[in-house]
Length: 87
Image (cartoon, rainbow, N blue to C red; front, side):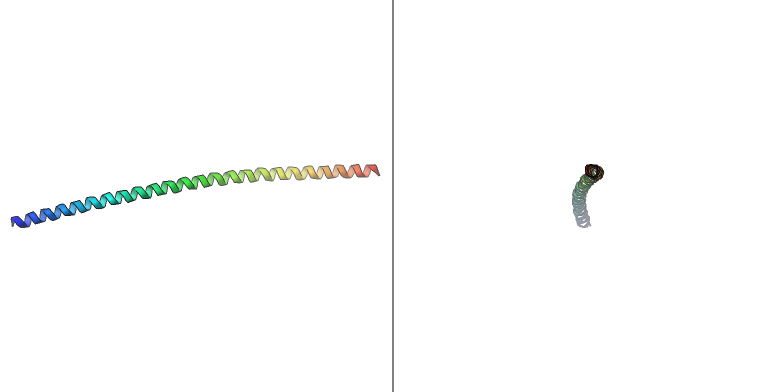
C-alpha cells in the first residue's frame, strides 16, 4: 500500500510538472502572437497614415490642375482678344 501511494505521488508530481511546462509554453506562444498582432496593427496604422497623406496630395494636385485650367482658359481668351483687336 505504501508503495502504491509513493507511485501515485510520483505520477502526480510528473503530471504537475507536465502541466506547468504546458502552461509556460502556452504563455510564450500567446506572448509571441500578441507581439505579432501589435506589429501588424502598427504596420496597418502606418499604411493608413501614408494612404491619407497620398490622398491629401492628390486632392491638392487636383486643385492645382483646376486652377491651371482656369488660368489657361483665361489666357486663351486674352490671346484671342488680342488677335481680334489686331485685325
